[in-house]
Length: 270
Image (tube, rainbow, N blue to C red):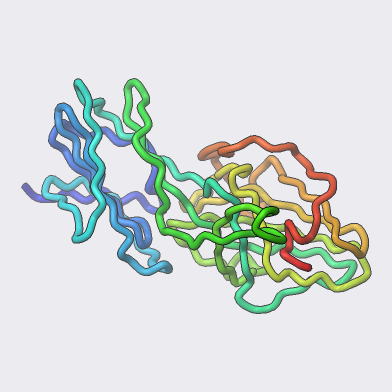
């Protein structure tokens, strides 16, 4: 049978009705996924063979879809398979350490907003009733240890960023979200941002009209010279992105403000 392509401009998530023996395929940047439903089973095959900066995006209803070479396949058995596939984007389950590609600093008394790309996960469930199937990264980020030594610290993901100060310079990657970070340096000295720890499990996801995914703004304030700062998460989506819809809440709830945080835990200094 002839494949029928259904392209969703900028948007790859949502609820998808799939008939028995029906298939769908996704192409989300470097991530490829093939989903097959039978009367008693759902089968999901995935590869991440594309380039990290692949910006392709397609969702297709394809009666002849087949997994690519080297695909990882997971099977899920049911007495009778539900017909709705729920596809959702998620943020990383660990904090992400963002490293500027070039040295970046904020002079004393200055305030800036930088826009950084952060990795996305994909969540699959079927309904009714809602049954979770898997939660997987669209692109495998590198793991890193963040802390003073092997006893004090935590596992995080590592990501590189251009630390763009202008939104128009931020490219749209379907497998990454945009996280605005507002840095206020109220101290007199220069604040060097060597690496930045972002609390991804505590952030929510929003989508703009073009299908680009955003988190709310992370605000970091340095009140005076020293190794202390305040971290706050804004509750609303960033105004710079225009009209937004909420896509999902945080993986973990956190307080609105952390009154004192060591710079070694935020900016990676020391």
